[in-house]
Image (cartoon, rainbow, N blue to C red; front, side):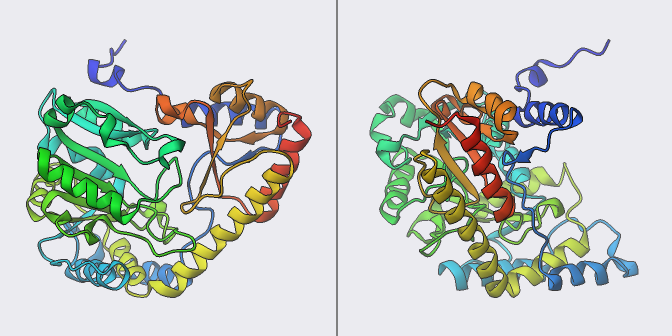
Length: 387
C-alpha cells in the first residue's frame, strides 16, 4: 500500500468533496438537489469571447508552449487597471499571468517564506490560503473577521510579537466567504503596518467586478501599496471563465520576478486561445461586466428578500456571488448544512470550513437561476428549520 507523505496528511479532506459525495448519494436516491455550495459561475462567457476561443483553436500555431503571457494580454491588464481602478502598471514588469488566481495564491508563499515564518491570514478565509502556507512550511496566524468589526481584521488585537515576526499578510476584498468590502482608510492602515513591520501584502481581488452599488477598490490604488504588495485578479468570476484557468497578479516588480522564477519550474503557460479570449474580455469588458454584475445583484436581492420573508435575517452582501448567513442557535454550521440537505434538498457550505471563526455561519452561492433560488427559499421554509 502506498503511504501518503507527511505533507499530504497535513491537508484536510476538502469539505466540497464531502458535500458533493453526500449530494450524489441523495441524488442517487431520487432527490433533486439545489446546490449553492460552490462559487462556480452557471453562465457562459460572452458570445464574443467564445468566438475568439473557437477561432483560435483552429489555428495551427496555437498548440505550442506559451511559457508566459502574451504582450497583448499584459497590455490589456494594464489598460484595464488604468481605466477601472485608476492604477498605473508597467505592462512588462508589473503584470504576471497565472493559471487562475489559485495557482498564484497557493504558490506565492513558497517564494518569500521559509519554514516557520509567520503568515497573517483571514479567518474565515478562502481555503487555498492555508494550503499555500502549508506548502511553504510556514505558520498561519489567523486574523478573526468579526461582524462587530465589519469583518475587517482588527490589527490592534494582533500581538506586537506576531507583527514583528510576520513575513506576509493575506487579504481578500470583496471577500470570500464573507462578502464584504474594504475601505480606503483600511487599506491605508494596511500599507502603514506593512511598512512599519516589513510585512509583505498579498491581496486577493478575484471578485473585483462583482461589487454592487459602488466602485470596486483596488489595494494598489493606495499610495505606497506597490512598494509592499501584490494583487491577484482573475477572469473566472468576472467573465465566467472559471474552467479556462486564466488570471494574473500585478504590483511589486521584484515579487513578480520571484513568482515567475518558481512558475518556470512548474508550468509552461496558459493555452494561447484562452489567452486571446482573456485579452478580448479585458479589452471589451464594460458591457459584459455590467450585465454580469446586474445579474448577480438581481439574484442577491430576490434571494435575500425571500430568506428574510421566511424569518431568516441574513445580511445583504455588498459584493461577490455569496451570502454569508448565521445559522439558528440550536445548530452548528455542519449540523445545519447536513440537516438542510436532508430536509430541504439544498446544499450550502458550513462556515467553519473556512476557519474557526466561520462557526455559526453558512455560505450560499448565487450560482442558480432566480427560479431555482426562489425554489430554494420555499424548500428552506417548508423544512421548518428557520423559526
